[in-house]
Each structure stands twice: as structure tokens, then as C-alpha cells.
Length: 265
Image (cartoon, rainbow, N blue to C red; front, side, top):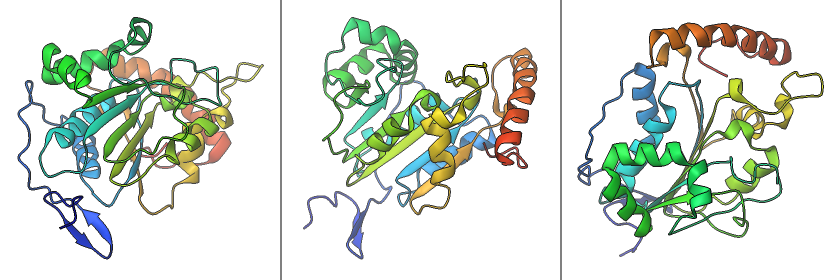
């Protein structure tokens, strides 16, 4: 018996995992609040998709949904995922030729840059269980150093705030994908911190912008785009975001002619 099968099956030399394992009991249950959140769940459940590129403005719940669904699959019996790796580019973002990973006990200096991630974990499973998941190696928080040479297998990987990652950083991360690895790369181009000298956003320096178009027809890669209508914060936030979004879309339209459909970046 193939030890990698768990509760799955093998077809044409590829191992697929049957979603027969019981969904683990999560402290705070969650159901998708919008149609696009439901669609994101469905895309993450597709075992034939290894990479999902997810774009969404602030308040659409993309980070919460991705972490919640990934934790479900990591903790569910019968799936190939043994751990969840969450990578935030905030740390050492200026060093574009290094990627890294910090397992186990987290340095306090690193923890402050990932405060929102810990808040989401605490909300999903509770503070004590979140600590145990980290200490047991089921959840690991990544930073941008030392990842080269590491094969990402039997794990879920979430790269958040990818709009501020360089094309080389994202390429290095994606080429680490190995057996039974699912990767979510998500970002918001309206929050890109890369600018030209004249103050105009420099999209070519964003790795997320690059891979969104580069991988649009690649097998095993899927795209997911949240819109302003998916924002679940106060209605005022939607109105505020629209004033920025209009300007942002005009810039992108002039650059790419790719915004005819509001559901794509």
C-alpha cells in the first residue's frame, strides 16, 4: 500500500486525497458570508489545483477565509496536509534575494510583524490551541529568509500581502512547491508600496502583479478576485474604498486594459 495514500486513491501515477475525513471541530465556526467567499472555499477544495492567486481589497476576508479553510484541511483526517505555513513579507522586505522560514518558537520581534495572523488564529481555534498548533509544528510562521533549498510538501502555504513581494521572491517561493502542497498567494494591488520616483505606483516591481498575468493560462493554477461588494466591514469603509479604487482602476486600465471585468485584477 502506498503510504502517501492515507484515505485517498491513486490514478495515472498521481495521488488524490478523498475528502472523506471528518471536518475538525473548530472553536469558532465560520460560514462564508458572500458568494465570492463561498467560491474561494470551493477553489481551495479542488485537489487538482496546486496554486491559487487571490486578489482582494481590505475587508473582503481573504486572509481569514484562506487560513480557516487551510486549517480545516490540515487538521482533517484523510488529507495530505500536515502543516500550515503562513508567510508575511513585512519582515526583511528590502532584501529581495532572500526567502526564509522560522519554525517553532517565534521570536518576539518577528511576532509583532505578524500580529494580525495571530489574531486570526486565536479567533479560529482559541489562543491556547493556537499556541499548541504552533509548538507542535502544525502551524508555522514564515519570514523572508533562508527558504531556498527547502521543498514544500504535504503542507498548505499562504503568502499574504504579496503585492509587496518582488517577482524574484515569488518565483523562488513557487518553485519550492513539491508533492501534496497547495499554495495560496494573495494580495491587494491598491496597497502596493512600490512606487516610481514620480509617485506613480510601479506595478512591474510587484511579484503579485507579475504572476497574476504570467500564470493566467497555466494548468494547476487558479485565480480568485474579490470586489468591493465583498467588503464585510462598515458600509462607510466601502464608500471610502471606492474613492481610492476608482483612481487605482484608472491607472491599471491605462496600463493593461485588463479591467473590463470587475471580477479580475
